[in-house]
Image (cartoon, rainbow, N blue to C red; front, top):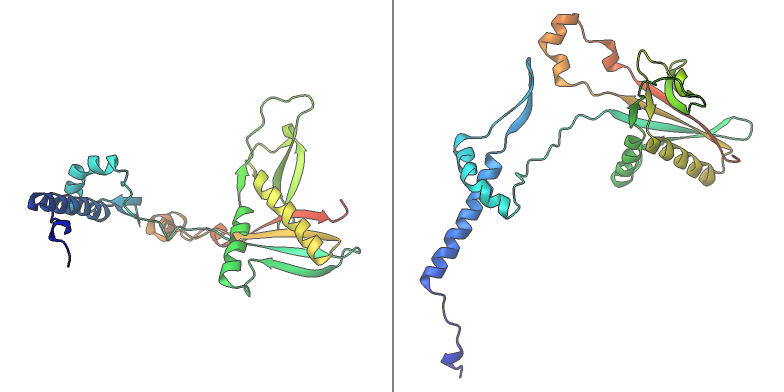
Length: 244
């Protein structure tokens, strides 16, 4: 027979009330923070702008925000999922010892499953990190060499020249060191995997057409959309030879 002295004692009513009020206030602060998050950016003819949340939610936030800062829960759970990203892919042309193309590898592979294609897209995005080449200052003896993209026949190729010979106007772009490292590493991997003598990597990219480009001000100024918005940027990272 259970001993009544060992039975759990119920919490006093005032403790239950205080805990319930505290939990309700905490949930109210979280919900108000989420509802009061600004929406946008919304693209209008005057540019991109954000709009505040409902007045009742923002008024609650002004009171509860100090508490949320103490408990470090100030994230409003608003995540950008519609980020405009350029379309990027690259092709690696594998060649034999005579320079003939024996196989072309496209990344991301449209026939791969979702998980593999996602990782391949991350690799392709990593090759798109182009940086502006800073204009050279005064000429220096033994100036270091700089690499930049130079327009060639229907594509851009890498050109390495001394620093003082880098074009000043217009400014030029160059791949980031990380992009060059990824390109060389992947070409070396493909040559080893497919037993190719060399590999040539060509990146294809196209900028996303943003909503402001389709709004009346730009259309009225130019009369039509600039053709550069729809052109594909082709960049050749050069040839990697397996015996080098």
